[in-house]
Image: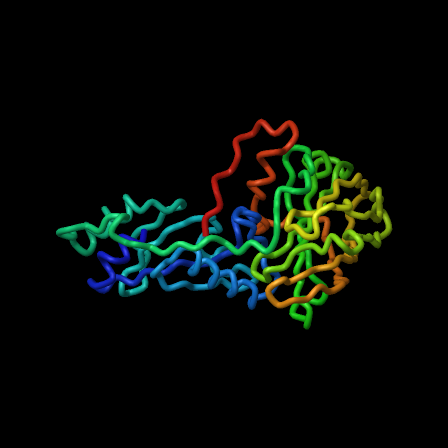
Length: 302
């Protein structure tokens, strides 16, 4: 795609990446942002790690652009000077796009090759060790729930992001498994402080909802710090037509070695027992899913 930018931007073609909700959270460690400021930080990280020369457009937090463009995770559009869409694809294809531009704008005498670009890619930040804590094996067909950070935009960022999911059985019957995963967000360069108390969660439940265990504590880890997720797999049972959210309180200790601090953090989430259409698929964790014989979704694309 960057070769096309180099070949056709001098001929008046403008190229944009549209940064939308993540199709596969946890790829390269990045998790779903909860504020527009964090999403813009993701854009800067994408520019830095990819070495891209494109201009970037950032979707709003209600994902208005994604929905208006058809909600595909990696779509592609050519828009003419009058604002008319003249080509569209559900999945981006640089080879096909070059053919389109040759037809619409004209061929390039000496097309740029990838080796000509000299892109300066940089790895995502790594605040501490990973691969220390074994991953939880979950049932097949897990789907994300809608979550809301109660104090999003406050003075203390949500360093650990929540991902809540339910299995196929719960989706069919109202009884099954609830997954709670807490992921350290790499944009803040923080890690768990394992010299302090492990992470703790506590749930307040509306009438008609049973969850066990309703509170829990993460594992005690021997190393001083790491960035592995803290995961819990719970039993859940509900009655009919539950409209009130679960209230989740989480307490943990976070450290930023670059800035020289370690602090206790207490944060709250509301968890709706409704599937999140923009929640994406946690592709990395799907590879370890128990009994999951379905075809895995494609790799994360921005």
